Length: 343
Image (tube, rainbow, N blue to C red; front, side):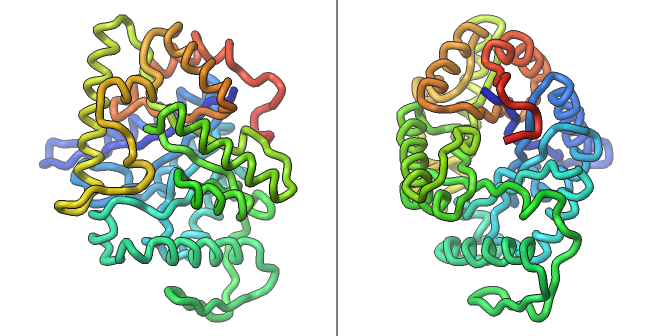
């Protein structure tokens, strides 16, 4: 198995005595340590208008991570394309890929939080159409050998060539977040890699991987399990009390997510929001517990076909969990057949 990271950082609001950049610097240190411990990648989220200080400028922060590391792959999970000018995004992402020596993983999604769409004054009903048009423009921007023009429903560009070129050819690996069968089929149709969310049950993970594998093979391509990244919350507990306290924090975070994602008086029906808001469901989906407990869950995931796990340590960026997982679990599950940077 291969292990990367998934998550965010926090920039606190406050007065002149509050260091708003502290959380970002802690995130950088966390990723530097992760690289030294043998983690393969780090994927960073994008969120806006929460009041919680979550990362909004993912590519800017990832540029700093890339500058402070040498082998760690840096990924977006995900950039929400309906909110962005696709050409500017292509230029910024290509710059990171070039400066990092080809370490960018470009993860994209349609978005699901109503407050973010309303904040940008973008109708959430346009998410699919905006996403697909932007993705087509970005792909063309990275692969076109000559100047091109684009006149679509939402974006218009005349006689452009996007610079700089990407280091990876034909472009950085593309990852798409998906959960519904139709969205998963779209990922396979485009030939991209699949990102699965951290809340889905083991049963849902198995179903989604089976759909993706079938759709990839139906199109005549060989299925590679490393093309599916499965996010999981993780916490290496000292004892049962430590574990239960962590589960309480996770439940609180899930409830904040539900509140931040729904329009007033409406339930959000996005696949990522389909989790059951119970302690039992939260514990089942998360890699929480002693090393032995987590090892059993990793064995179960591997039996379902999961080979690439993206670990979310939550807002606390617990260095103890990060190092204990690397020392006590990674060696038993390490993928020795693939070298870093290959695959």
